Length: 486
Image 1 (cartoon, helix red, strand yellow):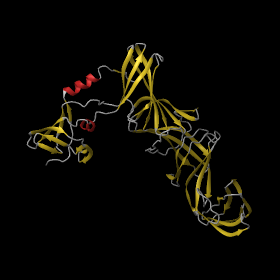
Image 2 (cartoon, helix red, strand yellow):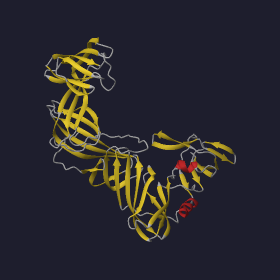
Image 3 (cartoon, rainbow, N blue to C red):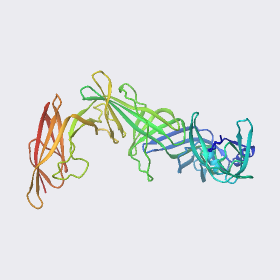
Image 4 (cartoon, helix red, strand yellow):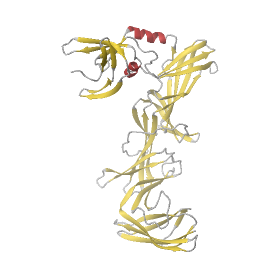
């Protein structure tokens, strides 16, 4: 049965190969890399630095640099001769990325003669020759033998008429000009010094990212935790970097063009080991923090790599219960709306005294705890921002099942055109078998004053005040207060 989809198998004549060789005859290619270093930013881009040896003649040199990232930003390229910095000037640069793939070759062969070979069930071979009239559309076909790329929409003008969607293997007489086997930079260099030059090529590429993931293992009494930090590198830049010196920069670097974010991969829950030496060395750099890998590694294209950043054990933590019925928006006096949920949070101080004191890159923190059978259970997660030394980290991990809050307005008095008084009652109910401390967080606007309250009130800022109260086991505590707003 004749297939409506065309599966392409390309075979080039000697004429195509000779054409490609003659196009490159006047060029000099760089040697293999003498050393690659990568700085990856957690904003989906990286800086690649590559050392190459180039043999130059005095005067104009055409130099081809291959093995660049497929998602390179050509406007960011820097070229420098380390041997003679002032002797080499870049006169012209071209980024060639029209790759030698099947779809591109067919698209650039419109108006050219093609030959289709069809292998019949009888064992005979039928050939169809004609002129390609259009660019085909590629699509992926998933069959029993796996996925393969097919092409549809072929229009072929033959001696007998126009043929739609012919099938078979394709032979072309010559390779379309301008195609390259891999993305390349082509330089026109003017050198005043002949000989071997050790050069450094640097450029930015998108599609390479890193993020930090944390695994926290909370102790039985919720008062200590072990923390493991993982670095996840996701390379979709279209380049492979072998035996590379690796640096990770944490911080919000300003970039003019918007960046896309996206990361895949998870981390395993592991108990931290205080004895393990960190494989990344941290240092302050500009207004950011730089993490340098001690040693080298391969960063392959289309690969997700995970590496440990640091471990810390027995970190003191505080477990907090927060009831905040109105948050994250404009506070409206007199409203009885709001959640009945009591949030569960863990707080820790990033200090040397608490076995930390490390600049912590932003990332997701997954929290685990062992149950009575000593089995590890996931109990929540939160994201933290870049956190300097000696700052606090607060993690919201979920809502308490056995704690309930309720808030209602009990009175309103309009004292004058500009002054109003509101009375509220907050009920906090504890269905646990142990006493807990719940902090009720309230908000207001304008010039406000708490006239009276049944519990201790702590002013946090111009819009926030709190009531920390102890709620007995299987008990309830009610907080009442009156606020005047001008």
